[in-house]
Length: 571
Image 1 (spheres, rainbow, N blue to C red):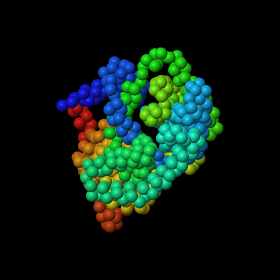
Image 2: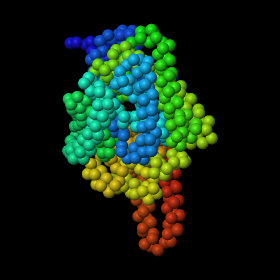
Image 3: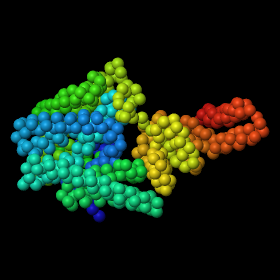
Image 4: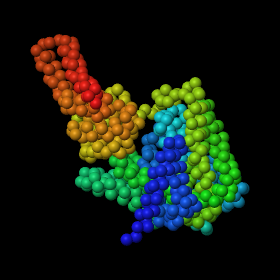
């Protein structure tokens, strides 16, 4: 039995387990940790892995799954809500930055205009994964500098599609640069039409059938088949697998199966994406950096300076406050993972030669390593502003572009439906998850924000946004399932308020012990309603009944708190 590949995997996992936590503790993030881990064990490092071609092929699946998740997250409705920043600020940033870097690359590197254009546009992109991680950790996604940063990243993610097409056409030597660009744009437009037709008439009915009659394992297999099948189809017609995965993500971006599919894909995506970044690190030639350290550092500083001085005035042009615009420019000054993807694809197609690829790889890596420092600076600059506002409700923006994070309702049966109705009356946005496909379809036909998914899965709740929601309401009519959800959600996100439905006093106590912030007893409310109706029938005044029931509720829930305090003292 050949165990060589197993040895390589053990080495890679060991390097990741040691290096990535260290980088995260230092504030550099996971991505640079994976890159450095790969460089350490690769041919130019300690040399534990010499032949990494097979690993690189496996790692490509990480990019495929990354593009798939990005495609899902680019919902047309989300784009429309912030269309001015996405289409205006985002487009200008990519075009102006890309054009300037293109000219500089052509003059300094003596590369062709096609290669220079690819370098310029690729380096104009920032790190979506890295920046969103930093903003999420600081809870600044909805801040005055987080919101425009997300808008720019959304446009950059969209720009990956024509760029991947452009790389494919660059491999055709008989085409001119103008023909490359026109064909790339035409191809992107055709793909968009294909997505609309396929999603409307084929994919949704197929997923509906599988969710209704298939097992959870079959649904997982179907999600993987969708991604890999689209990637393979795109490669067969001469385009990249990564773009095929992106198209697959767009196909289900507005589907009510999106959260369940994200939950099925995420475990594979996280592991394989880490493997991709490690393969990039292994392909890094450290000698190239040691031969010209000051030159490559100068290029990195120049790149980040150019991006800063383009983003800053553009942000001011779109009405972003002075210090918030500085924070945006600082946070997005790096290059990112999509540049690595584009350069890797271009190298595999012979568009970029090895030395240039190595230099570009080093510049991207160095810019990402500097990002945590710039993030801290961006945060301090923003806090120094007299209007350091962190919630969208307080930001002075167009009313159509306001964004309030929805609450999450786990289970949309009779109780969940009533809770949703009350939230609608109070104009509070919500997002409900239920695994009954027929219920989901029925409620969505009425315009309700209900999605298919198994709420017992923490990954489904994460995909729905539970970890960043104002609070979560669990309205499942199954005590065991409710306890499991409360326990797993509280363990993963201790700070999030959880409101849960309990059957009786004992169950309410158990749920509070597991981490629920507030519980409601079904037996209490049913008893209260019956007593209320009976007393009204007897002719008792409604105000007297209300006082009695209020006292009854206080006494009942006081017992829950007393039991919890006793248990705490015993522990």
